[in-house]
Image 1 (cartoon, rainbow, N blue to C red):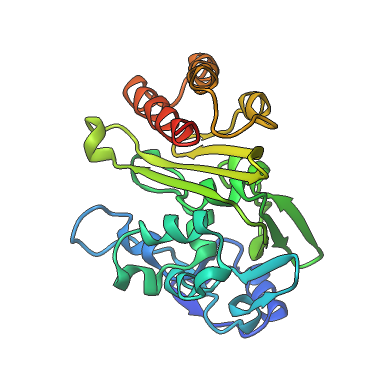
Image 2: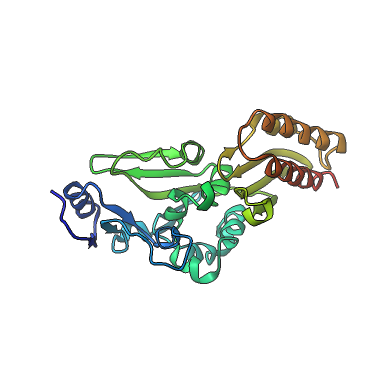
Length: 282
């Protein structure tokens, strides 16, 4: 039975975490706290959950490891710590994280909290765009098991991919070299009050050939059109401008069947994509 007053639990291991969670099923995992503390949208004290499970003392969630093929980041690593890794971090992720709030907030905000959190006005996770473009995978853990899920699947579910009493523990990012990276953040204030988001455009070239291209938008929805990506793969560089214009048209057709984002943001997104792809035609 739950207790009548608020409590904060500080487990130091996964068994302790899930034991406390089993005793108090309504408890909420707490990482950097920026989402909870900023959710009220005002200077008033926020309404905190009745019981909180602080993840701060679980060292497994703070580890960063690297192999020849992957970088693995614990869910409790803060955003500035990831940025400070320098060239190890793919540019798409580093640039996106630098665009999140200011240094003080990034010292508190964790990568797991950003991935699982939902922003104001229905917006999604900023990190979802680069993580999806980079083919990152997430480890999700319950008391009984752990499983891996692609960033694309997780973000498409808008974090409902988490089962009851399941947490994100690790992020695995393939270490590949992307020659061309552009990140754009669309702020809600610039969109007439509509929801903003993040666009990531990455491309890989080899011997004047475009070998891979990925464009992902993450906001109130997650967007990636693999058909338009396939159209440009294998093309010679610099791109023919007609191909660049056709790529824009493919994205316009793709977005025309989407309920989200709102029309003004769709137009800004298409213009940004055209600008990026024209950069490969110069």
